[in-house]
View 1 (cartoon, each protein chain N blue to C red):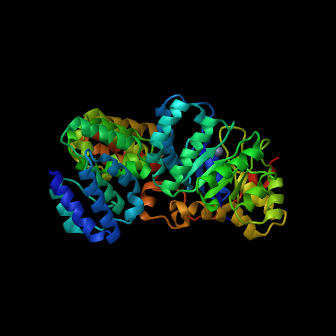
View 2: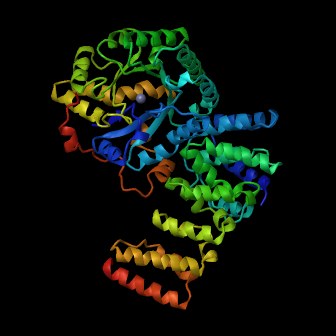
View 3: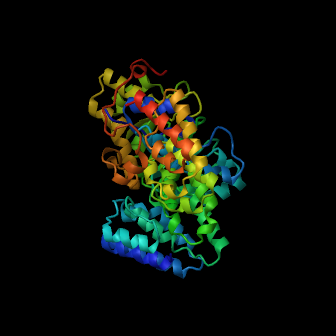
Length: 302
Length: 248
Ligand SMILES: [Zn+2]
């Protein structure tokens, strides 16, 4: 089964991870711009980070036969450095209009401060201007209120719920998110967010419509094989195959496809210039049969 | 070499291959950039949107196109270029270049914010740019890249390296090409710039690979030979014979 991890911070991961993901069937990833674990102090750090998402990381992924996309945005934590945030918002449009940028994100709230609110709203306007979907990072603390508020603000700014992907959902937030017509993404993340057994039950309850599974793997304790492991567990526990395919592959294409930057043909039948540029000289064959490795067959994430 | 001749040639290829709406978009972008003062903002945005607007199919080049390219810019060969790369080159050539330092600053900004595909297009276009003598640091930067596609855009099918690099930088270029498995045969000017120091570096490299029982890049022998003196040629031939005895 072909899989997509539509939220994973590959810059923080090793080549072993890329190899394992490829072997487990991951054909494409989306890397949202986020913070890097500690606050940046200069505009240049942001600029180089954004450039790495559309350059070096794209190349690194291609070496393993994985197509790399990204989102551009200023995350909520760093929105609180108001002077620097203003500078970042100045250069953001330049990067947001690059090839392979599939959304504005991940943006939203962390502590739900006024500074975060201001930066969030500005970026919603940018998404509207560039006709890009939005990827929302919902807060860890005060989650339910923060999630509802994120959706309210999107509506207030005239965004269609169908162009907004609300991430880091849980059992408490999913219903409102789906009822209001937003995409509900779930991060399978050990300890702090969702475990994959809980994810199986969410899909059993709500079906496949507008539900997306991702790993959000980064520099913290996280699992870059969360999507393959969850797909496998869903199948084992009797979730119909079409629902697994939708939540672990197809829905990401439906959600981010409207950007015009996320097309299945990119990885199924890449343009010959891409083959020369991205895949030249490496032995990874496009369209090869993915093999599910041992490390996937184990693994509950709890 | 004249920018006018190059842009005229690019325009003739684009006329032939660009869809009507893409051609109209490009025309409008170029006109707008002429109107708005320094004109670079429209160009920067257009540069990002080029792939989407114009598509990324291969540029069609026949023998007479290749001749015309070589006439407009000696040793330039556009085979293997894609349509979006041609358009991007066209846009870059529209950046005002009367003030060399101002022009270079704009170019540096374009490079600093470029994605992978854009970097390849920019480095590939280096031999067509004005102020060639200012570009040595940029060439070196491209050759330092860990992204093979970017390295190749400077190193392969591109005359600028052999024209602008110092001998040390040139020798490093050949050695790196062998390290990253890029086809040395496609490096322009290799014969002309062959030298004894390079030959020795390549012989040493072959020895190191041989001692480690690793395969020796097949392109190494031809890359080393033109620069060899008599003694080096003997060494090289001996090494090649022993290496091919191990890996036929
Ligand atoms: Zn994230």
